[in-house]
Amino acid sequence: MIHTFGAAPGNRTLVVFIHGDGTKGGPSDYLDKSAEKVAGGGVTAVALIRPGYYDSHDATSTGTSYRHAGDGYRDEIVAAVAAAIDEVKDHHRARRVVLAGRPGPNGDALHVVDGHRIDEAADLGAVEEDARADR
Image 1: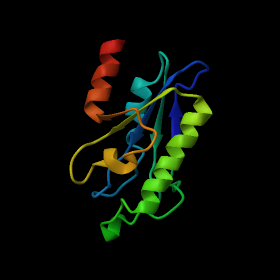
Image 2: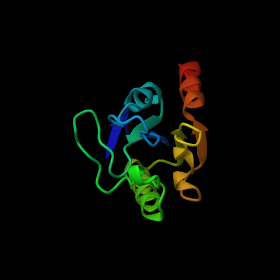
Image 3: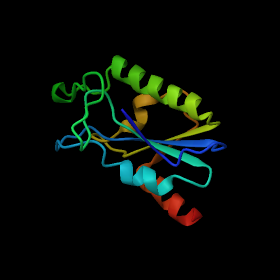
């Protein structure tokens, strides 16, 4: 499931926000606010909800999360996330993809698409700070 912000013809940068493992439970669309903050000015931002997780409207992303099994980074999950990013990149005709997530053992979404069509990976806080500085 993907929530999109700031989509406009000519935007060349796509910033993809990926949530962490949700160890505390609850909806996984909390990064929508971050995506909305960085959208605009040539940037399309999306908040991607990983397979098997849900948003605050109780819509669930296709697939299984395996988070309760402690294995949310199985090959099939990584492939699904990478494919979703590829599709969004192609759809928006983005030239550059920045992946934003939280670092750390339970929030390390950044390694999910290692080796896939990502130009840059950044800590969520750094992406938000850069967006505020550019405005």
